[in-house]
Image (cartoon, rainbow, N blue to C red):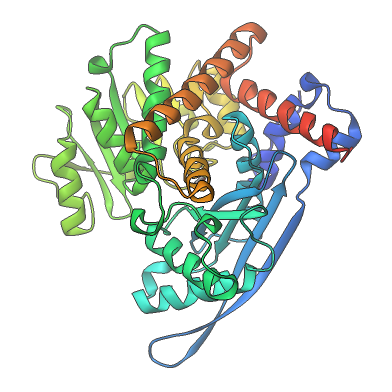
Amino acid sequence: MAEPRDDMTPFEAVTFFFDAVADQVGLDDQTHAVLAGTYREIRVQIALRRDNGSVETLYGYRVQHNGARGPYKGGVRYHPHADLEEVRALAALMTWKTALVDVPFGGAKGGISVDPTSLSMTERERMTRRFMGQVSYIVGVNRDIMAPDMNTNAQTMAWMMDAYGQRVGHTPAIVTGKPVALGGSLGREAATGRGVVMVLDELMRDDNRQPSEQTLAIQGFGNVGSWTARLASEQGYRIVAVSDVGGAITSSAGLDIEHLVAHARESGSVVDFPGSEPLDPDELLTLDVDVLIPAALGEVITKSNADRVRARYIIEAANNPTTPVADRMLADAGVTIVPDILANAGGVTVSYFEWTQNIQQFSWDESRVNDELGRHMRSAYRQVRDYADAQGCDLRHSAFAIAVQRVADAAHLRGYV
Ligand code: GLU
């Protein structure tokens, strides 16, 4: 097997994980080439009028990776690092993710290279509407459906839906992760975190570990991190450290997550939470805990810190948090990693439920959403675990092999290759 380099770009890293299973899945060279590349990539200029009257030139991206299994699907992030290379990597991950949890979508991702904290609410709205206008030619209910990701949320989706609707008429299924009042699904906001905890529960059950005896460290306290923390603490896990952009905190007795969520909402950060101690954010990744959950940026577990990771399990709630070199080091050290395409697939799974509800003009109650989410997540986990056990490979290898096989089958059936 090829050796990973430590200077890989995000797309090279995702391609490395894909290449690692190509032989096992028996991909011929032509199918390999079709699945490795992206279908369409666009960069759009967004001339943003600031509140003070000046105009700033921003760039946004949408990459459609593979549509063999259904319409392109994936979020849009607002972040200074969101460039074509990163968005391309995230689009490919969406193809493998939707295939793995078996929802009838392909993979896509979008982003605007911008520091959203520098924008007022009205500037965000103008930027979002302009972006939707620019990509409206390539999205569609049966073509490409956008959703929230880093620094975007239900409000962002409401503006996108409205901007699209002004062009083509009311079309709720054009985006998912909308506010419930505009056709969003109950349970969508918590879905990624809920899926993370469902997978964690399955893993602990398989390994005969009691939730109440497990300590967790969670990097990131945005939508995914905070819901993961809330739902994990409800199941009895002890969350001993969390971080956000403001800093990190720890408590060996376990953080009171309900109060922490309120504190973060009021003060804007987890820092200074009463009863906790401050922690160096870099140290969170190397704490002596049972389970480490990166739930923020990509490429945080790297060659430079992987040898200091002391967790027994890593659950990748973030996309692409572990570089291929770190992945290899951790595998050698006996750390079990639940890969992003399985661990964080709960979000896009409930996006699929939202899309179907919109198309049928019918809404499900929350217990139905959560039951169906559990069915998809547990079944995907079981398949990944069983394949890994049968083949003697790690969970990432297993997840990619299953996903790549499904996409290759669909591509063959359509006659792409
Ligand atoms: N942004 C989320 C992800 O990375 C959700 C995408 C979606 O719902 O389409 O999986």
